[in-house]
Amino acid sequence: MFHLDEYIGLPIAHPASFRKFLLDNLIHKTGTVNYHLLDGDGDPNEVCRRVGRAIAAAPIDITFVGLGENGHLAFNDPPADFETEEPYLVVNLDDATRRQQVNEGWFANVAEVPRQAISMSIRQIMKSREIIALVPDHRKAQAVKACLEGGVSPLAPGSVLRLHPAATVYLDRASASLLRPATPPGFDAIIYPKH
Image 1 (tube, one colour):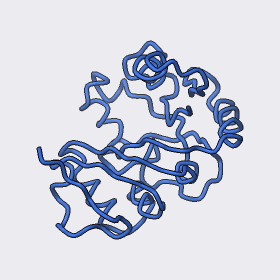
Image 2 (spheres, helix red, strand yellow; image 1 turned 90 degrees about the horizontal axis):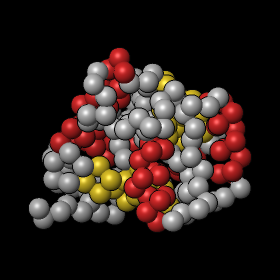
Image 3 (cartoon, one colour; image 1 turned 90 degrees about the vertical axis):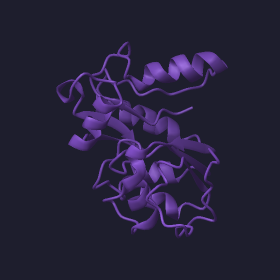
Image 4 (cartoon, helix red, strand yellow; image 1 turned 60 degrees about the horizontal axis):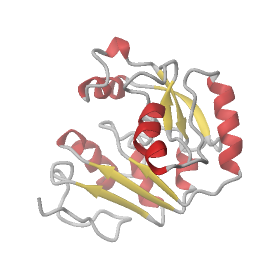
């Protein structure tokens, strides 16, 4: 199991730490023993190199992602780097992403949200055999519209999923509320829940 992204400089004990979330809610509960977490407390460039070497030797079967309110994929904020071949990179978090973290209750104010993170790159995400994106909530509706109905663009990073041969995007009614009734280009179907 490879970690998608992590804040730089955020201790693992912080409630917003993705390492903590994965350990508490996946790794310990499932008994997963082969995993590679991103150490946000370590030297970020060395973490990128170390985990990047490991992922290069292990083809990924399935990647689980979400979309941010600004359309970010992992922590690849717009305009996202669609070109880098590096599996992991250090990214600057934009104001929209930092405000989203406050609005979700992970931080008391924007000043507490780290300004940088380690993120799996767009090209590395796209190397996965299958991608499943879970995108709930009305706050994501504009990003969903931009990513599924606009052009494929670094300005809507999640739009790149339309180029993957086996990407599935799960929406709820709120996140799908701005979509036209037709199926967006690149997808076989959009499945809307009954509730």
